[in-house]
Structure formats: structure tokens, C-alpha cells
Image (tube, rainbow, N blue to C red; front, side, top):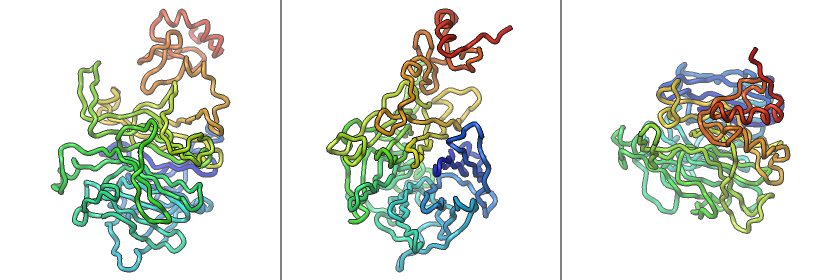
Length: 428
């Protein structure tokens, strides 16, 4: 559960946690996406002023070669991507407004940058575990914060149907393709009513609430608008991976977690009151270069292979190439059984999403190869019969590019696999 960003062909990963009870990290690394075999490169670790901060649930936003790392303090940390060092800048609230948070207290908020300003929405803190709906704007020239809408604590929280409700883990992105019509979009999220109950706060319940709404903020008009979920949208959920691909002019979301949709695990005869997802959706606006739609529309992405079920993964776009990557995340080990992880499992795998649209980097995709070998979440496909399950990989020189469900399928498919992948038997 790490925080990532991509810039200049590099994937940056900073801080995070392995599981809910730790350990917590403050290390900082990058991966050159054009030279993956070179491995990870270490950068200066995030300066931890209190020694054992739980550096999770914070966001990093890039503007003018500076990666801003907001942790609810007036002093804003940032990493200078040119000088490769950590720096700080003092910020302040606009006149007449008090600083709304304790230092290092706000977590699981949503953040993005648009038109030289950073926007922070929602999140939870020590005095409001349900979630807030406060929208803040930071001018990255003057470093002055301005509250735009909503409420920052349970004492001030009020019902208002004209603005998004209190939440954490909302999906947020900025679309500034059309001058004069720039908007910030907010999708879904979760009201942590269970957390509120644990801390004896108002609006509590034994079950949290997953939002299924879609909003946009008019940057110039400074007002919220409830959007329609047209097309084939994702179901209500939280903790989704998301990115806005400027090259393709579309938002991409993956996976996530629902606190209120139950799951039945037939093989283990177990029932869970939650569920994880591994589906992918894109949101086209009429201004998208690859869109033929006259109105905004959601579309479901069909793919033979996909990453396993997870929440809090990170989707990132290399804005220079338009390529979209997914890294990390976690899942409950009861939901996706894993003998080595009793409570939760964190991921450090890297995926690229290739889309069959202009600029989607789909040219080199071998559909026949995908059909025979693509990994379907936590399962593998049998190279011979196409069934999905926990199959055994080939032990030959191919390095496990093919899987087989049983000896008979291995016998029937070996010759074709040997020809397709130039695999040889390594056993003496």
C-alpha cells in the first residue's frame, strides 16, 4: 500500500505500509520504465520528524517538477525531481480561516492538481473517523489555502444534497482539456460508519457505506454538479486505483473494495460481508481524442488477463508516452486464500494496461498468446484446454510462460507450447 507517481518515464514509490498493523515505510525509490531490467533505484528517504510516523493514506501530486506530499501540516513537504532532494515550503490559510487539521492526522483523502493549484477533498482524521467533505484549494504560486466547500469535522458536518457527502478514498481527477470548461471529477468513496462507531461518533453503524455517486467541481464557476453515470459504469465501491490519461483524454479506474456487498466463497464454504474487485473501466468525455461519443460515457474494459483482486492499488500514467501502469495494492488473505499471509497480502507487482484505441499502445499485443497464457486474477489459464485455476507452470526453459491443469493437458499441449515459446525440457 504505497504512494506512486510517474514523470519523465520513471515510476516513483514512496512510504506506505505492508499491513494495517505495520510495518510502515519512509523509503523512496524509482523504476525506469524504459529500462525495467535495471531494477529499482534508491532516493533519499522521506524525513520522518517523529521517528515512527504511520506514513500511509497520504497523497503525492506533481507540479512544476515538484512532487508535493501533503500530510495535513501548514508546512508542506515536497521532493524536487530535478535536484533529487526533499524540501519544505510554508503555507497558510486564507484570511479569516483557521487551519482545519492536526499535523499528520488527515488520511485517505483525495488530491489532484489542476491549473497550478492543488485540490484536497475528504479523508478521515482523529476527530472525524466517518469522513469529511471539505474541499481545499492550494495556490502553488502564493501557497495560500482556501476552503471551497464542505465541512472538516463532525461538529460542523451538516447534511447538504447539493455537495458530495463525507467520505474517504474517493476517486478524483482533473480534466482541463477544454479551456473554460475545466472540471474536477469525484467518484464514489466510503463513509466509514464502522470507524465512527469504534470511536463513539455520530452517524455510526456496524457497516460502512460505499458511495455510488459521481460529482464534478467547476473550477471556474466554483460549484458542484451531480453527474449521471451513463454507459456501463463500475458498481459502488471504495479504494479504487485511478488515473487520468491526458494523451487518451480518458479516466481509467481499476479494482477496489466494497464494505457492503457480500461474497460467498463456495470452495471454502465461507461468507464475507465485503468484496474486492479486479475489473477495469474507462470514462470517455466528448473531448477525448479516441472518443466517438457525443456525451460522457463509461465503458467496461474486456481483457483476457488482469491483475488479481485488490484495493488501494495505484494506477499511474506516463504523460510523455500515454502508457498506463498499475502497481501495488492489498487484499484480505481470507478473500484470496494465501497460505503465507494470514490477515492481508500486499502486492509489489507492476502491470501495463494496453487499450485497443488510438495511442493505447496496443500494436504489439498478441491476442492468441493472451488467449492461451494470460493470467486471470489469482488464477492461471491452462495452455491446452483454456480452463482457469491454480494450475502448475511449465518447468521447462520458457520460465513458466505456460500453465497446465493436469498431466493429460501437458501431454496434449506440450508440442504446440514447445514450438510457440521455444521451450525445451530442462530435466536431465
